[in-house]
Length: 165
Image (tube, rainbow, N blue to C red):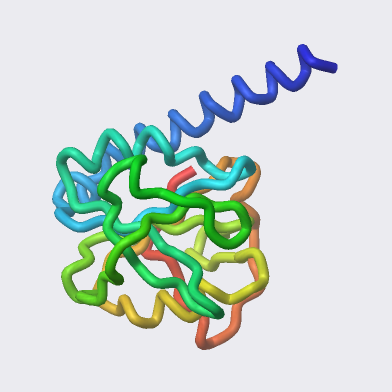
């Protein structure tokens, strides 16, 4: 069983690297100065090293759960992260509220479809955040098995401009 877990972890690591390599090459990412991304959970595309790497070149924002909303905060290094809601490491510090300056939002999801519809974890955090970013280019990232033919969506749901898998 330990060998299977090791192979699974290695395949997730490689799949994450493949997705993030495609993201790095994307013109929207290359041109972006301020990037909203997420600090990944174990079943998501692993963004931890990516965040550390790119924080030296771009302003990186991470969400922090505050009540029923996501508050955005600047990533300033590992020393300023603490476990927040759901065991996700979140930055401490002042809220970032200049939403119009965010060039790119990199968004997680349980599943996406080719039209950019996103299925989240059911708490609605991103459903409440994304409408505040109307002019921000939005890229959903996921593993290939998370891209479905169709994801249920309602009229008010904000679609991704693109999905990278």
